[in-house]
Image (cartoon, rainbow, N blue to C red; front, side, top):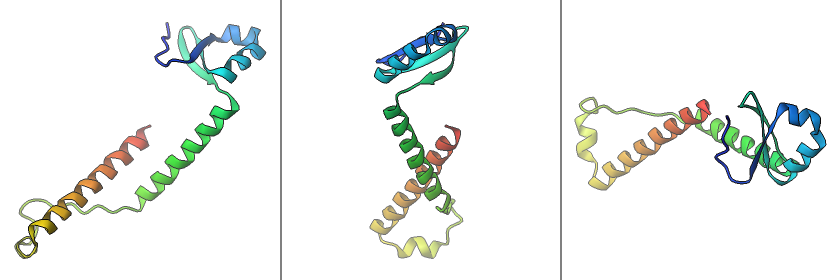
Length: 117
């Protein structure tokens, strides 16, 4: 059996939806409606307002993905970086480099998470 983990949502079976589709749409105006078949979710009904929010979120996600596609990441391994570069930098500059590498790694990780979503 499908259990709702979100407050403000309803479940309707495919049989119930077929019998009373206008009623299912009325419920969808107020809350999300999960459509199930044999106890497993197969779809959902949302209001037009919620659909607009979903479309906006998808567009924003696509923009973020496009921005990340243009980010290049340079990987530094210990011992491969020329000694002169490390020694000529002040501690503040070295911290700045570490922070930018951390941000780049986070951007790559988020990109991988978005790609899987």
